[in-house]
Length: 154
Image (tube, rainbow, N blue to C red):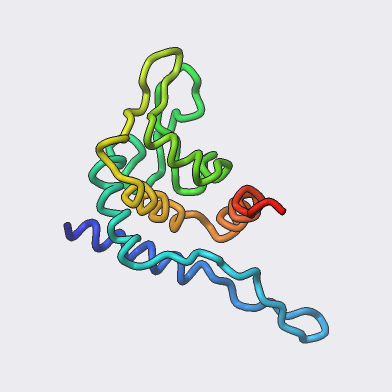
């Protein structure tokens, strides 16, 4: 339990410290960095950290760093979820679907299905936790790509 509290606190520090100081132009005007739009509760991060450690860390690594061979198609290795892999390229509903249904490669399961073992809130908390690890520029790229998909038509 102590490890989970330390990890959640570290995530909060990383997110808070990831904000850059305003840059100053040659004319002496400050330009602010783009806002970090991550709005997630501390409770969600703590739940996500605990659930991630309990269910995901064995394959994806305790810091969501993934397996070193994750890009090798011949190896069934878990990818990183810390923003250094491809997870940020997926829409949130797709991330949730992967967790719920699992992953098969050549007909063989390489990631178990968590449907019936984790509910939607728990899956969202896990996603919020590993997204909190993403560098601000990675999160912003994901958010910009996600926005059109989540806007109502018309």
